[in-house]
Length: 447
Ligand SMILES: Cc1ncc(COP(=O)(O)O)c(C=O)c1O
Figure 1 (cartoon, rainbow, N blue to C red):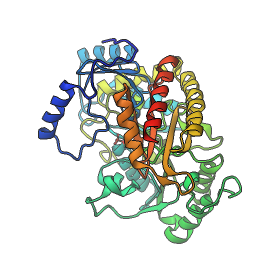
Figure 2 (figure 1 turned 60 degrees about the horizontal axis):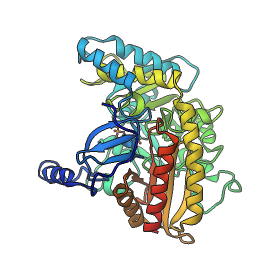
Figure 3 (figure 1 turned 120 degrees about the horizontal axis):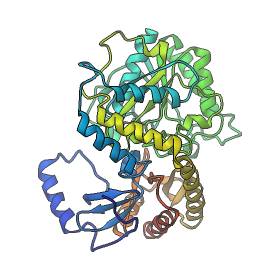
Figure 4 (figure 1 turned 120 degrees about the vertical axis):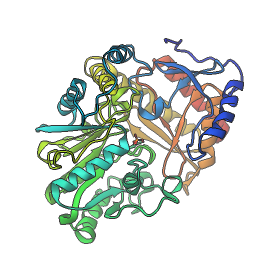
């Protein structure tokens, strides 16, 4: 269903139909399932979501990074409809299907790294991060996993052990699997060493190497897992040279390097994968999920053939992994990225976001930092620019106020004080500017 690409407020937000659904939800769904805005979708297309009360919202949430190609892209919907008529499921362990193999071939071709690859399909980002650890352990015979501060790698128990933020993600779910070692990320706005780039000489990368050498032992490390731009951590884009240093360290210490591109991948940063913007960085594994299948659940571990083939037959899998509907959607989505203009749109969106957000940063004292890469941009909010005290309340106020005005936004950040933008890349410039006008007004209310 195609809906007009324009904002429309039919009444208050949330309206009566959303409020009634929220009441039903309270009785049926555990409160642990958090939702940023209490409105309920009726239809969505392109960059606009219509709710059950007839309000039409400009979407800066993109289904949490899943809808880079837009809501219901016609070619993806058509491909899924055709697949629905053929078969819904076979299960990779019972009998294979062609869409699974075609997605594996496509990802082997388009992920960073010019080497022989294999791809294994699962249902979610968390399953991808869990499985890459299994594969790296099988390939190296080592146990350790090195992860970073502020990281988010999912909510299942091993993925949660790799995730950095205690509350609300980890609190109460201990104990976690062992052999997970955490080191600092290049979070320059809150540099753990109180240094300033570039004078710091990227000392945090030296620290990571020293930690691995002294406290873990490279001979014990199965893999280092890095988000090229941290997502849930607050859209933290490391400074030029940092990812190169980490990748180089992995090469010298002979440790497999995993790029978790679950959120930064599929065009979000202006290239298909964010790693592509770091010359010479060639991950041994790349993880894809979110926007890979335009809304259908699909995730992938792609890696060097010799590493990926380490687990024996039957050692990898799952009932639903590589579901044919999701694979068909992924093939149509990949086609859109390879032969459409989504990457150009991501670059243009990134330019507009950079210009408008920097301007907001100059005018609103609540904005501590404007940052990101390409169309993966965010504002970190602070109560005081000198102390950088995180403005968690202000971030919640911005999300609530933008929703009242017809724009859906999301928070992020280790301190819950970041407003991030994950707008579908198909959003027309005029709608993007209108959404940014609303964000600007909401910052005025919150600040
Ligand atoms: C970088 C990264 N890795 C892993 C995950 C987990 O993905 P999922 O929620 O599909 O399990 C996420 C989710 O936000 C993510 O951003």
